[in-house]
Image (cartoon, rainbow, N blue to C red; front, side, top):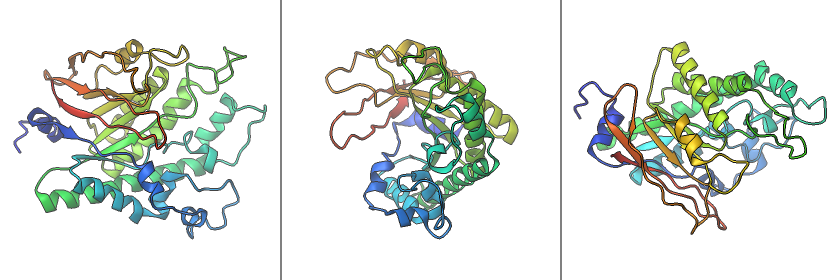
Length: 313
C-alpha cells in the first residue's frame, strides 16, 4: 500500500474503516486461571497480596494465553490489536505489586511518590509493558505475513485508580491523592517501555479525569524524546453529562484535539446517549480531517467495553 510519506495506519484510514480488537479482560476470564496460574514459578513464593486478577502480569507468566487472544482477534478481522497493558503502570499495579503502606492511613502524595520511585516496581512494569508489546508484535507480524494485510499494535495506556483533579474523599474536597508530576512519571515509564517493545501507535483509553489524560500526553511526549520514536496517538475518554464529579464532553475535547482519532467509551447507560455531533479535527502534522464513531458500553450483567470504528471524515 502506497503511503506517500504518511504513517501506514493513517494511509489505511484514508481508504476504509479500521477495526480495533475487543475486550482483553473478558477473554482472559474465559481461561479460568487460578492463583497458581497467575503466580507461575517466578512468583510462586510471593508474600504480598494474591495476584489473581493482575491481568498484566500474565504477559510474563502466561504469555501463550495473551498471544492466543491476540491471534483470535486478528483472525476475526481486527486491524489493530491492543497490548495487554490497560493497567500496566506503577500506580495502576500498586495494589498488587507494591508492598508498602500509607503512613497517614490514607493513600496520599507521599505514598504515591514511593510507588512511582520504587526501583523494583518500575523495573517490573517496564518488563511487563515491553513483553506485552513483543507478544502483540509477534502476533500482528504473523497475521500480516499470512494474509498480506497490514496489522498494527496499539500500546494500551488505561486509566489510573486515582485522579489528579478529584478528591477521593467527599468530606475533604481539597485533598489530592496524587500530583501531576506523579501521574506524568507513571505514564512515562509505561509509554517508554511500549515504544521500546515496538508498538505502532499508543492508545490512551478510558480516561475519566482530564488532568490524568493531560499528564499521559505530556508523558508520551517525554517518551518520544527519550526513545527517539514518535508514533500516532489515539485517545479514548469515558465521560458523562450527568455526574458533576466526572469530566464532561467539552473539557475532554479540548484536551485531546490534536490526536489522530478521539473517541469515548464506557460512560453512559443505554437510552441515555446524547446526540453527539462529530467535530472534524486537524492534527499538527496533517491536513486530513478525521473523526471517530462514538459508542457506549451497555451497563448490564456481563458488562464489556465497546471499541471504536475509525474512518476518514
